Length: 406
Image (cartoon, rainbow, N blue to C red; front, side):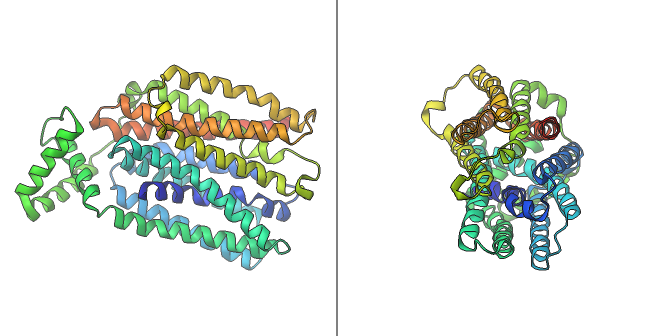
């Protein structure tokens, strides 16, 4: 449950900005804010990811996770204050968005690598948390807009304050979850493996049994020595890009293509689709489409928990990515030239695209973990996250280009 909450929390700042597009459209009616947010966020995220992977691995999971959530909390507090004093400017968004992107580059591989230490369902939980973040942001936005329809300033303030509380709660959730006996045992097993104190075990079960014996024999002094070794080991750790890519080339390239397609469409193209008097107010349609996207992406990320997906072949995952490309003409024809005027078509297309994105991303993480040896799981999961981020950046640029073309 804690991994789900962390997965929810680290994406909350970005999702809060994206899902509040109606507020920014009122403030900046002549600017396509959604494209600029996606582009600046993804570019900063991608540019910061590679150096952070090399340097960040030298720091503990805790230090990276705690520091990131502190930054997120400060950003959401700042945005809330700007809303109160009517001081929100476009340039502020253009500064805040890349800062969120850089901070995500620090925390995402930390949480994903931390989850990879545990059984496979934990990495699924991480992806589920990602999906929930979009749903939570959208639900909060819809509720605040419904409760206070006549005052967009107050509704937006409440919206960002709730996001701030979520971000702050992640600090406490991670603190208490890492101190459970189960988490301590998993972390100890990981440390034993990377220190080279013992040959790599044939199975994680044997490794855990070995750790239990070591802990019983060493007592408190042994635990302190392990903690010291962990610090020394982190100082010299480097990210093995080549070795990781050779281990999981298929999932890495696939997740790049999958998210490149996704970000070239969401949120830019989706929020640009016009409609005629949807729910008696055109401003509801982009919110509805973004909500549909977030809900079905969440369902897709949960789907690997169902037995039907347990033995899916890799080629079927890759085929699904190719089929997603067919949605481009549909979105374009909903905008310019506007040959598709009914809202039903974009709604169906959005739900299919969102579901496939969530499903494919979760399956690729599971596939990568299956293909990775125990001692390389942290680096392989980080590599997968790197290619995901690169896909987001390229996709955002493609979407930005499409916005000018249509």
